[in-house]
Length: 314
Image (tube, rainbow, N blue to C red; front, side, top):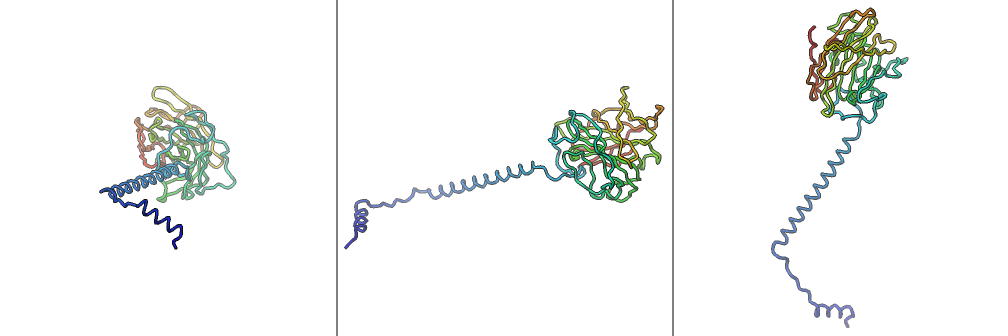
């Protein structure tokens, strides 16, 4: 005897038969095309998400690199954590807390974004007698810069430029030196053993959103009373002299000028006589990523691409 379920199943098959109808011609191919397109869209979406993630990661600050190792263009305009006290797009002030420590740390070390940058990299302990102390900080075109003082002993190996010993300095541009900079010393192969004045120039057109950055920095001995910038048009500006910590026998100066400025930086004795001088040696037309260094006492240029330009004669 058939169960109720069996009788219902027979009735449904008899009264409502199922008709099997084949798909229209080409349906299978169209389905496969749609599946292929769907897969391509999915892959494209995954790639877009991955690229967005990479862009976000690249914007996250990483461990700082000294200017001599920087490989990426610098940020434009004002930086988020300015060093020192910002007084505008262009300013300069003496650095604070630059006294010598009981034990000078001449090893390589990093610099935080909120501190004046000093480029003390691996290997420089071979010629450093003191660590690098910031003596002045400021901004040019809204970009940070720092002026550092240090003392050296003689060095003639291949890892760094040749040092004859004595007081030296760095002018580094950028929050972490990413715009590059220059190094200069009171005693070099081109200066007198008893020199009282040295200076170097730096030019950079790396950031297209700002005017070219052109600056000069140097140091003077104890016989120098003052330093002036004398433009060829007759204008004269006395440059501040920044004291270095004990153990560094020099005072330091810096000045940023317009691209193509012409004149001389002059070191004066207390009676007003000229002890030494150097020309503004960065020619007009500082453009592109190439950093230019020149001057009377230049030791090296720190940047991705550098050019050393001879100082004008006279």
